Image (cartoon, rainbow, N blue to C red):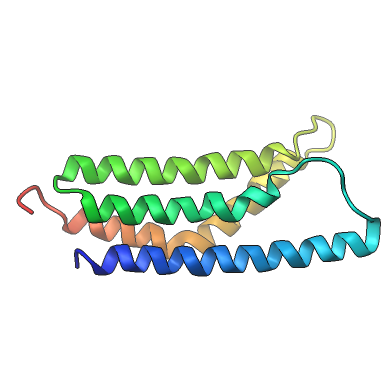
Length: 134
């Protein structure tokens, strides 16, 4: 169990980054065809790497944690990475009049829940099974 969870997180990270890079490239090509290039800086290019960081921090935490407290700290840190990503993406839609921020929070929340549910469940299982005697 000790080695399989980090391997699972790393494989999940590789697959997630590949999917996000493919979707990002496709989105950029579609945007370039319809509206030309967008010169405004965007957090979109960081999304695959920040999401991948979640999986790396998770894998390292599971692999190196010896006590339940340090495992909990690793879980908190990895999920804070996701929170930063979530808020960075939603902040791009911040416009008080349009309401894009709240619709972005809702849509991104659903996507995050659906896409990352297996990893949340894996973290829950690891925390439930891990004890201080390990």
